[in-house]
Image 1 (cartoon, each protein chain N blue to C red):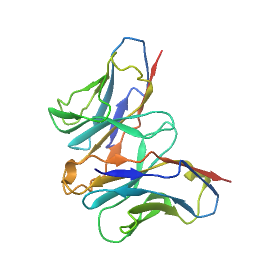
Image 2 (tube, each protein chain N blue to C red):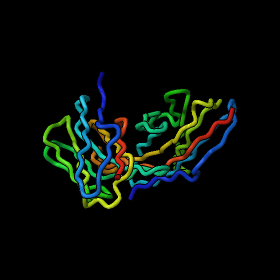
Image 3 (cartoon, each protein chain N blue to C red):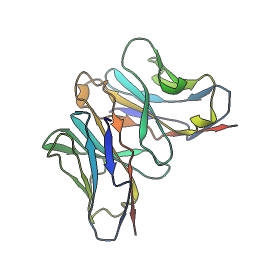
Length: 115
Length: 116
């Protein structure tokens, strides 16, 4: 089946550790995104990438890093510099054609908890 | 700058009654408007979108939304609510001025609670 796969679903991080969340899509989408969602709140954009080997900071990029070495993959690293990383992380993607009406599709999300 | 507002944190409705979840937006160019639904511990699921054409857009699960340019609104509606519609609903907008590279901006979400 085509779609966006995020792994792991649940991840526990110790203080001072870096962790990486995986996002893979087989939809042949050009653009990929990472959002953070805190309980009961909306989505905040962390990073996005419109094309391979290029990415831009979103609204809350501090303490996070990404790479886009392949079209289908956009991993997110939560570094020890991120002071409050406990949240639900969502990966998304869409085609980059037309004037902006492209639908963005989401993965099932990953829960990160600091212990 | 583009923005979107969902003025209600929560909407309560009885099963079988019509429901409305409100959304207003602000963009420079033509708006591309979207509605998504999120069930607990899940990703967002696409419901419907407005690009151009008919102001009434029909989507998944019996939902529809009406684009009103003069009121800059895109309210989500359903004629008869189901308990299974209870979820978090997000409105989103992308500014058509600048094309597909523009980011999609999300509202803060509205929790819909349908009572049996």
